[in-house]
Amino acid sequence: MANTIKLEIITPSRLFYRGDIEMIIVPTLFGEEGFMANHSWATKLLDVGEMAVQEPGSQGFKIAAIAGGFIDVKDSIVVYADHAEWQEELDKKRAEADKVAAEEWLAQNRDSDKMDVRRAEVMLKKAISRMRVADGGRRAGR
Image 1 (cartoon, rainbow, N blue to C red):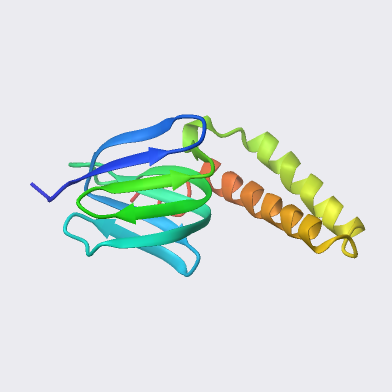
Image 2 (image 1 turned 60 degrees about the vertical axis):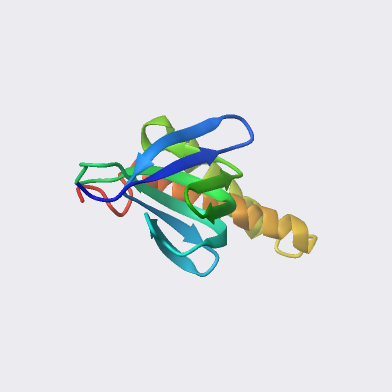
């Protein structure tokens, strides 16, 4: 049996996940990083993207769209996410509409306040991430 580690994923609205896992892969600000049992202690900021959780005995991953936060790795792993949605919870048509709306706003408002432009860019990135995860994510079938 593979080594496992306790994982909790917490969002502002709910306890998203709690259980033993073999591995978690998250989007950090410097790229994807994976964490397993006996990993050295770490705290990393999370980016918008795809999060993958491998449960004990599973050959594949549970996939979720995640929107920022941080991961704290010690004797257990805790992910504090700004927002997270499992693949089966996603509404792809809504994500597509959000993508179109963000692209249109950016096309018409490039000279707007830098913070407003940055918010729209993040909304676009979130929509694209949600669409990819709704389609199975990059780890589909693994």
